[in-house]
Length: 119
Length: 107
Image (tube, rainbow over all chains, first blue to last red; front, side):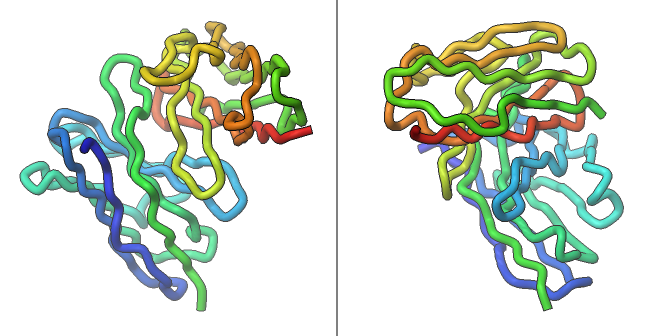
């Protein structure tokens, strides 16, 4: 089955760190640009970050620049999001998403991982 | 960054109704406009890409149109399973910004 499965969710104190993983199955991750999108409780979707197929080109939303790092291990078919200096406003469900080449739409999403930042 | 707006922010309708949701980009994005449906507790699901192309498996009652800065999503005859929140997203450039969403509920 073609799917993305996130892991690493949890509760962390403000200023703490957490790493999310997104494991791909049923397809070869290395051929796709990948993204992270988050959704705060009761709010809309917010794009967080993207990474190129080879992992060299990365881009971030302004609110997470310098605190979050996206990476990938194509040999393990896995995408990562390292989140440092976490703030209460980072509390959200984090989705990984696959970008289809060409029109660049997100055609496959994970189920999401809940990150809660609270003391 | 390109800003995306949607209207209305919420909409009440009945089964069988024809519904139209609009999306506007703050600058031209050609046809790099996608529509997603999200149901409570679930991940978003792609409906329309490239402004008007129907994703495989999506019912034909969904359609999209537009180019440049103004776009629409139309549901020709609402079904019970269509009550959800709908988001537009531009894929012209990064960041891949989303609209604020339109919540469609039962009248």
